[in-house]
Length: 185
Image (cartoon, rainbow, N blue to C red; front, side, top):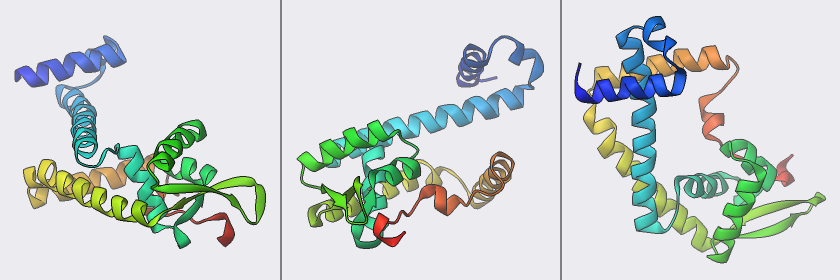
């Protein structure tokens, strides 16, 4: 077992307890800890690259990207929270930061005066597209370029199986999310 695999195995024990060493095979521990480690490291590195290049986090790019894909580039804050998997308070803080940079504006929802929408500005759309390109290139470089076609197919198959077990009704494209404004409800 390599040093990295041993350390990953220890991290799994730290997270899930000593019983894991007896209940899971070495391959199971390596698969789980590898998944967790790769996910965390890619997110960390891609956040750093986005911050250095665009002054944005992955969460910010996800929010801007959802607005870019929405009809008229407008969505309710509550819908943004639901589709990004972030709390409404976290979305509100991100919107505050993006609004200060003039990448979006808060506007009242015309069909529900109690609701607040975020509307992407032209500069916000341009920034979103540039950041999406940066992230797409980083994922290609750090993830897909390290894998061959068989590896990609195996991962895709495994994630499809897992998604089906976790939420059989889930649509991966919907999870990635293309929200609508409240005007289209």
